[in-house]
Image (cartoon, rainbow, N blue to C red; front, side, top):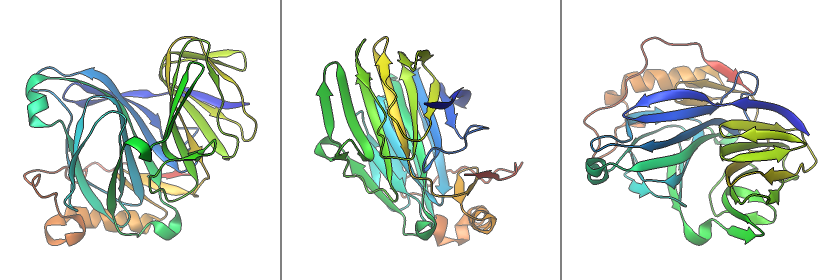
Length: 300
């Protein structure tokens, strides 16, 4: 029932924020359309600290930001300027190209705060790689929830178990937030081909084995292995249908090296290229194209 297990690698992003980089992993680059997954924090920011990601570009993917605690302000070159808080979803589709920043609001940064959450990238199918960029914010009834017998669940995106979030996804997928009390049981949805469980907090038992915080468990296709909470748990279950081989380089995802190379050239010359203009209100700085290029990674 279990295909493999691996742990997130710690990455220091600066400003007091450490993340666990879960996907891509050397032996498991993607799960369904999910090509990138970071566990952000938990981090206790001192006054003057916070998330401070300068404007940068994306192509060929949708980003999904979801918080357990804290707040992040999103600004993009479509003109959206919106903070995300716990229980909400920011879904940004890059398509042919978008530029955005992610920061702690200055007022919150002045006092310090706690931040804890997840960020995922979902690769777009071939026919939508060049789609128009867009941004959508969801909360409340857009994200159906369920509670029973020590289990609470929220459908963050996609569909499973007969529930569907009102998030504009581009391929069959699911993304679930589970909170389990000790002894509570659940199982991954059987209707999706690729499925994985990330343990953000706590310990669980699956098929007689124990797994803990920071681990991802990838399930074999089919079947519904029982997940039993050994402690209070925060879990993210995700997956869906594969979208095919992808290349990832820096913040760029594409089905061909040509698309990556064109985006690199356009970002290097962003001042003369409307494809990658900077966000209004956050156009004083940006992250330049990396000078020391690592080879593009193929993922499937």
